[in-house]
Length: 430
Ligand SMILES: Nc1ncnc2c1ncn2[C@@H]1O[C@H](COP(=O)(O)OP(=O)(O)O)[C@@H](O)[C@H]1O
Ligand SMILES: [Mg+2]
Image (cartoon, rainbow, N blue to C red; front, side, top):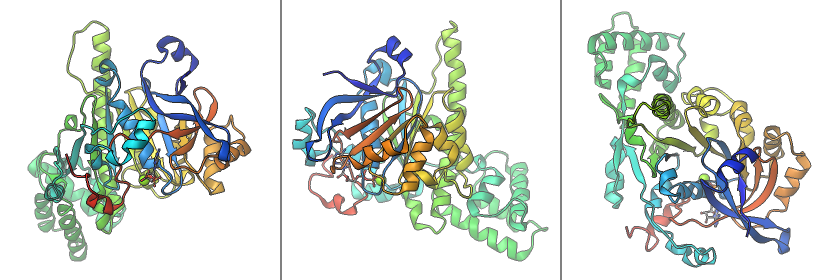
């Protein structure tokens, strides 16, 4: 049966044919009771993309993102080795990819597939590693950030101050002094010691800041030396960065945002460097070890690149959205509220996979990205989706087509945010 390839324009199709595509599901034809699955649907992964995965809560967004991640590891070696996936796991659900999806063995068989565990690289903030290890889940690499990677402004935004209030001004001065005293290697304790001896600081400001930095120390991510950025990448593999723990702190999203912002900046710079080396190789300059192209998948993306107040991740992620194609960075943004996403992130999306959405404002947001379609058409396609989980519409800017799709079942276990899953039999058999 003929393959449908989304995300690939005609010119690339002539050049690459079906090479470098990921199997995501099957085309749905007909409506309601008569809906049935037809042609297999594949998605281009050779070119960088900005993919938006939308849908209301529980409609299959996180699941679909994991399907795409799984596919990256099943590509032919020569393509796979040039790619890597980094999943920013805000909900703490993707570690279960280490386990095969035994519970859906029968459904998978209907798709001529079998459950399979994924060899993911699992990274957890250093301070939370033991929690997973006590559960019997192996953490492959600690995740930490060098204190010196945080600019004064990063602290200011993360703590919710302004660069021009007395707290912000003090942070700027203190970080400058810390740098001149300790150079590039310092800890939060060093920052606090400089803060303590800062004579220009009013006592109430000092107390507030000492409190914040002490709390930041307890996030378990800051060190003198951070995880080298190259450890986040693994050729042909999926790295899962679990940032879910900060949900417990009152400033949860801003801590997650701070991490996402820092990582986005680092990945962007590494890929810019790598791109230069790759060009150099193409020009005959010999081979150097570089980091692979990367797909960054961000769950609950509206929390980082929303249309409201800026957080510490907003600008760094928008840079990836706007300038990531050249250095080979693809983004997959998952959101239940496309209407709440930053307009630039919406505008740059070239592929939308949307599960069921009910709010008119959200459907209008999809329409605003893909001007080729009529609002009524999008609405009709969504209304006619079969009731099964994992059904979605695809809006493809590359081929200017709209489709209905049933996303395939997963090979690896989907934890789906339900803590009860941990207790299910077979889950921890790896
Ligand atoms: N393609 C699919 N095939 C089969 N079941 C699916 C599919 N997508 C989602 N589901 C089911 O729906 C549940 C919710 O999906 P999930 O991706 O966690 O929702 P959300 O949109 O909130 O991220 C999953 O736990 C799974 O049982
Ligand atoms: Mg989800």
